[in-house]
Length: 205
Image (cartoon, rainbow, N blue to C red; front, side, top):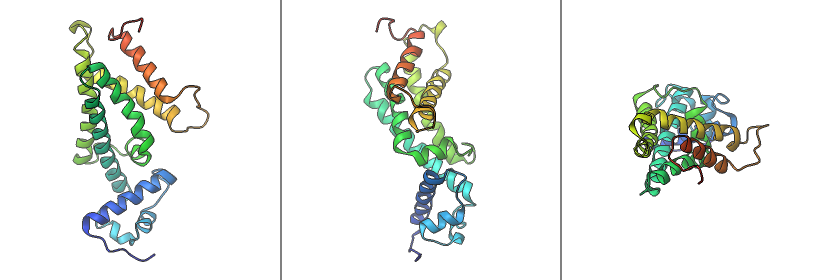
């Protein structure tokens, strides 16, 4: 394959794009640095000018994924205003949309085994995404009496776990887990049950 002429940033981007394609095709442990280099049209030596190895490539894919994820969550949260409930529910739906639209990033973030603390940039991007859900939970929890109010971090973690479970079991084509209901309906009803339990939605709605 002829080698392409890349500027510094272009080569990094080409290598991460190649990594994302390979993650989607083969999983995070199913490809080598040489394959990523070949897919990007460069020599393996070129990879090591920018990344220490495959895990660094995946970590950068995860960082970019968290940045994109945070942007999508923030947009959903803002579009759901002015009510705290609508904004909160919108962030849950955005989780499903991200997993469906960005599978390579999603796998790098959640299924690769790469710690979000691998480097400070990755940790910051992940915390920003988590912060959107916490902010949404904090705003909604103001409608709960203080003595019954769960910590915002716990509140958002419950919804994150619920959203992640729906994605993993029913929205990503896992064998043997076909649901008779669309993932969006499962998530909406699950969030509804949770919010009713906190007294945020009347029982008859």
